[in-house]
Length: 259
Length: 67
Image 1: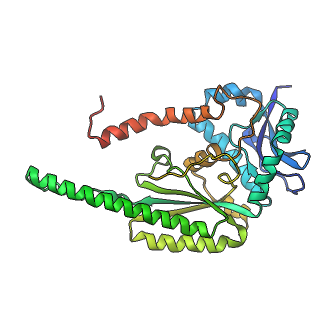
Image 2: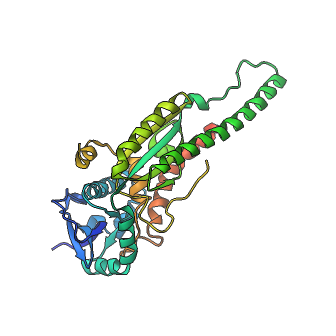
Image 3: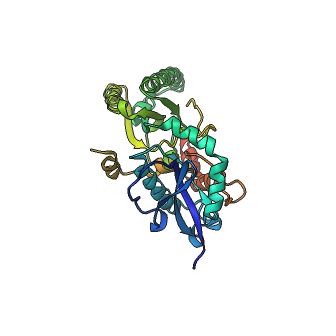
């Protein structure tokens, strides 16, 4: 028989009932592996294709990373529909079930704390972009003399600096307003424009841990904000619900940023 | 519409996958160590993928010609 290794998608409380999971990475069967009060969502992957060497070889291979990440996320999304689930960050590999069990036992307190933290909540993403039109320079190309140009440029820079401060303030307020309706909220680094393929500048990459009971209200608020921001040249985009990727690690995996 | 239905309708963008699945979640010291720096290897890989595109962007922003 070919060698396998264990891929762990996430961790749930052992008592949680689940139906049958969707297929995992490489179409493998996904199941629950209980360890005392916890259970890991796992599947067995062929070592040849998903081992350490494959991760090293494919670390810069976006299509390989995407196929793995997509399945990982699908399994977690399925689990999150019915229970609190702590997502594990990729790569999440164990040589066998015994080593996974030992790791879970060692981290059990931290994992149980994370489960309590996200119980009844799901994560929402709100991203705000500045429309390209708003970002364009106001300095006219028709300005003729060098002095006129420098004057106009200086005025333009001042205006831009003020506009930038106003924008920061606006976005900060928006983030706080959404935060009031959330159990927790965090502002992440803006996403990479090369990866997103967006020409507009991202000015907010916010994640919000929202109680299911407050979801409708939260979404209504995002709609109101989107409507109100349109005239200010801001594009608001909401996605979710997500498993609580941003609210399960005690270590700061994300940092507050000022753009 | 329940969660499962909502999710099946949701087309997850690559950038969001990278942001959350590789940038978020919990690390519980996997015993199979990937490279020297573990998770950082994937970040390093991503930087390698993205760097050339950023160099082009910067040279455009600075009005430079590509060498």
